[in-house]
Image (cartoon, rainbow, N blue to C red):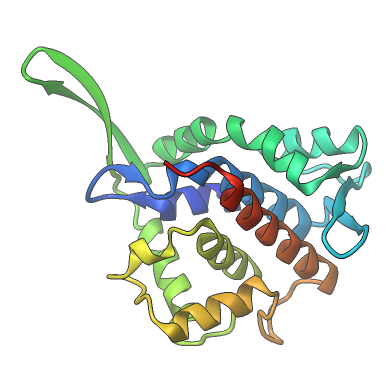
Length: 222
């Protein structure tokens, strides 16, 4: 099954332009998705220290099977780290291997084109898979239709909102006050009674999403 970070990168991919939405903050967002999945899988947990600080601790007896998730888990199992430290350390290493997975799976196609008939350049196109459409439909169902939020989709929607890229999806997901309100609820951990995730995992996911937002807001603007 694709990781949460793979699904987030796939959703952020823009087929019309062949670009990734939110490139400026992407590595924070992808690292946030990795941490969220480790939390939902109970591979890591948080130790709150005050109102605005927390450390990530790993369950040394419960490593994840996926090697990309495991790399982040191993960084934390050495010793507890702050969420911000994990985002900064692991994020820059995620984009390319995650993109390669999407290409290998057929969700995205990498093509070579001629520029001015002389130079070659690599470009990204939509692949043959319909997974991106299914993910967007699930996110839309939660944000627009108010459907119950399955934990992975809740985390995906919250991270998409936290990335700041959600307004770019206005054609598929209307950027309205109702959608913003629902996205804020997901960001706060209000996923609905049917969301099969522990309260601890939800709370940690909220911490992660807010850390992503804080980190993204701290980046210098061009």
